[in-house]
Structure formats: C-alpha cells, structure tokens
Length: 255
Ligand code: F6R
Image (cartoon, rainbow, N blue to C red; front, side):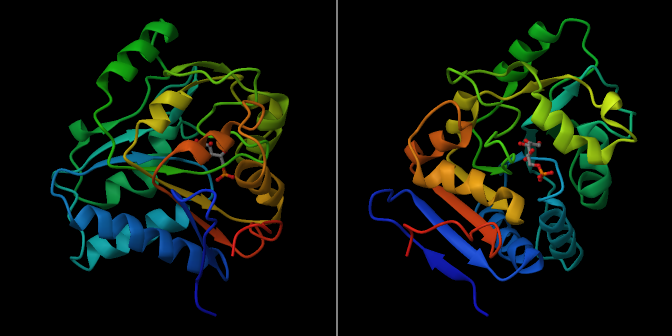
C-alpha cells in the first residue's frame, strides 16, 4: 500500500502521512528528515528518544552509510533527559542517542546537545539549556499515550521554557518497560517547554501503535488544551505527522 496523505482545511499547517506499518512509517520519516537536511549544510535538528524514532534513526544511519547524508555540520538539540542521571548510565537519553544515532554517523560530539541530567542545580541547567538552543530547522517528536510531547505532561497550563518536570504515574508506567522495574524509573526530567518546541521552524511527529490512537485523535481532533499538551501543535504552521495505520485508526476528520 502507498503512504496516504491526509489534510484538513481547518488546520492548513498540518499534514498526516498514514503508512502501512512501523517500517513504512520510519522510511517516510527518514525521507522527510533526510530531504530537509540535504537543503541546508548547517542543519539544526531537534531530536526525541523513546521507541518510536528508533526505526527513523536506523534509516538515517543507512542513508549516511550510503553517502546520501552528511552530519559533519549538523547540530542537534534533544527534547529531554531524565533527572538525576549520569550520561554514562545506559538508561540516559544521552546514552540512547549515541547508541542509536550519534556514534553511527559523522556528527561532531561538540555539536550534540541534551539537557544535563547530572547538573547539581537542575533549574539552572534548564535555563542554560534553553539559552543554548539555536533556531531548530526541524524538530522530531513522539507522543505519549497521555498526549505529552517532550516531557510536557498533561497540566492546567502550557509551560513555555525548558523546565524541571515531575513525571506522571502514567509516564513512569509507560517508560518502565525500558527498566527492570517501575521503581527504577527516575521521577523527574528536564524537558524543553511547549514554547521551546513551538519555536521550531518545522515539526515532524512520528506515531506508532494502537495505544497511541486516542492521544493522536485528542491532539488533532479535539480542543487545544494543556491537558493534552500535543494539541498545541494545531497552532504551529508547519507540522508533518507520520503514523502507522494502527495509530491513525481513530482519526476521522482528515481526508
Ligand atoms: C522522548 C520524548 C517523549 C516520547 C514519548 C513517546 O524524548 O520526548 O515525549 O516521544 O514518550 O515515547 P515512545 O516512542 O517510547 O512511545
């Protein structure tokens, strides 16, 4: 099956690509990231961790190995990091990014940036990270089953800058699959804020699996509310959502 493009005249800045499965979703997402990177030498790429973008990163590594992509001048800014955690900890997002992408391509170590999960003063680390973020050309996002983006959890208000987050019980439970037990999941994180994310020139959200279908529907077919943090993306002028069929199964008002 070919990837299907869905649009909605009420939200002209957003397009959905519905792909058959996870593999097709990852290839489509990589074509979008790779195509954008080829337009600009000193590309600034915003990155996400989690299981969804793993296939995208594999595809980008393949494109690099095939000589199609060059990361020499690329600079990256990740959405978030657990707190407290050391960079060497295999559960850290720093470790994840090197494992899945950075150590497999020709990116320069000094050009990769993540919030500092081992900083003694987490508030100061957030301020410093926020100030360091360059204008992001393309921000990769996943979505939590509770509608979070980065670690911006459902809340009564949208928080603008990079900040310290108390993870919700739902997120601790979701992320415990990467740990031996839920007790080991850090209870805090440092995360780009909603404003930080919205400043990106373009956004690519990757979504896979039936367990994300409700969050995806609420984000793009419901009201813009901080209880569904991803719903703010309805106000962004340039968002591409690449999903597999299962994740898109509850989307009805896009054709
Ligand atoms: C991770 C991040 C999170 C994830 C989300 C989905 O850097 O920002 O918002 O994108 O929790 O995670 P997965 O892909 O593991 O379902």
